[in-house]
Length: 269
Image (cartoon, rainbow, N blue to C red; front, side, top):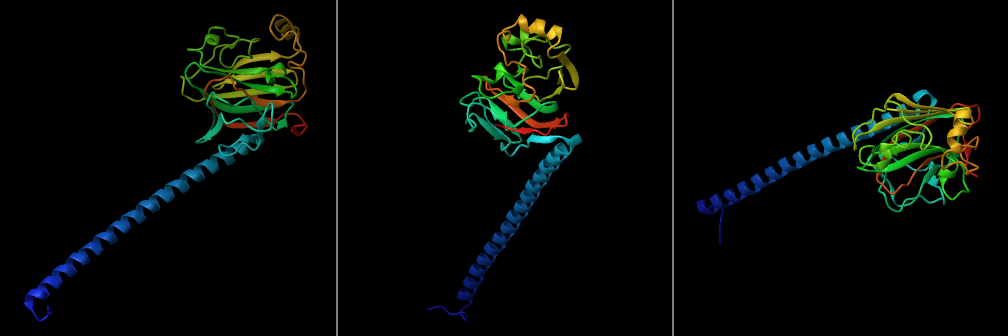
């Protein structure tokens, strides 16, 4: 048997206790480090959340604009052909992404007459998409009623060779003048203004398209385009905003709208 009265046994107990005490001390230090790291991570996460919330609040309060997509929810959107939104659409970070597969066009639940729509967009290399407005339900496709703000990689898509089908054009009808388009993968800012019959397309702070629906110039252009036999094209007083599934990758963010007429947004029927 051993005894603490034995100097050798006492030394062994002291040595063991020292090892245990050292281990406990290291464990305590590591726990403190983990706690500090968790605290920093929590503070960073909370800070990021506050930035996102503050940004969304700022956007929502921006001159009376209503947020259509805040980076967290698609509650104000639905599919064009059916209520359900296709699986190709998803929220990635603060952006709405279409992956180019299995999505279908999506539209706002509300309808708008006169409005100012603001949003950011970017595309993958060679990609094509669009934002349509005053879209009506019941057609085979939203472009049968809604004029389109073209979304495009001008450099790698064939439509970029034609100013009437390049980025920010009023698709197929009005060419873009002096566009300043950012490189693929970078965000572009866009604005669509509809007031009465007048339409404006903006790209990165510059007005690049101006048109008047129903004017002699408009009617002449439509009569010489693929839209000539589409009875409901640009004919509806109110309609949905539509994000197009064109089979390519595209991202949208900061989508907000301001009604410019006296009527409130109309719910989908």
